[in-house]
Length: 144
Image (cartoon, rainbow, N blue to C red; front, top):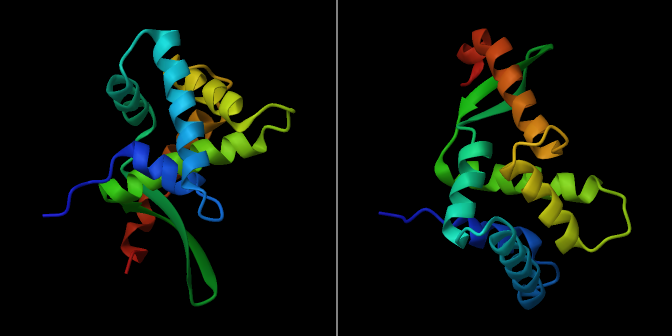
């Protein structure tokens, strides 16, 4: 039985650039340390809350059949769910054009997720995927 990867490891794996794992760990550790002191919660509880608020079990893909394109919802595994969650968060961090460090941007984005702030780009992307999945649920037969 394969164990599901921890969300912490997925964050580190996503941040590794040119094999610099130490720098990626430093960014993630300082981010979650700041969040745990800000909310007075342990690391595991913060990760669980992020997973609960952002974890979709549905992914939306565009499939081309013949001359048509269809938006099709797919059920996903835990590994894929973790990766998509981290990808949405990190894409939102990269879109922020302010002159701050990645750690500060990540702290702000995760804080917005934890307090369910409407300015969180990650939550908006998450709601958009759910909206697309519901509106295109009739295309499920195009999955294969």
